[in-house]
Amino acid sequence: MTIIRQKKRHLTLIEIMIVIFLIGLIGGVLAFNFKGTLDEGKVFKTEQGIETVHNILMLDVAQGSRIEDVVQEWTTKVRNSSLAGKPEALLRDGWGEPYNVALSNDGTDITISSKGLEKHKEKQRSKDLR
Image 1 (cartoon, helix red, strand yellow):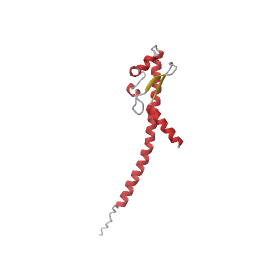
Image 2: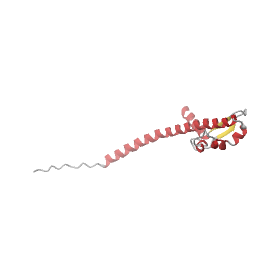
Image 3: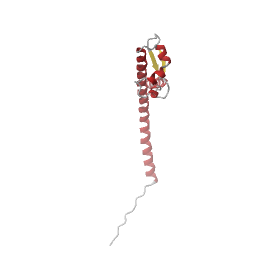
Image 4: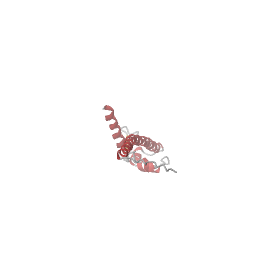
């Protein structure tokens, strides 16, 4: 009876290095694409938050509150609103910064802005100009 022995194949150092390089390259590409997705998610959260906060505050004005008082106490109004599912999340934009809430120039509307959103849009404009 004859026993046939097979040679075991071992990975060389070069093969291992090539595999590690390819894994790193693929990971880098995925991370680069994922960063853009995260920024777009922050933009979406911020835009939706601005709209929701504006609706909550203007509804309070429509129910008889003075617009100046609503602007001054906007965080309390949002926290106490039944329209806010997660009121604490509505107090900050996608970058974790609080919104800037002010009375419009003509005094009939409330303007809400976000420093993070403004910075993101400015960065996008500078990229588009290149």
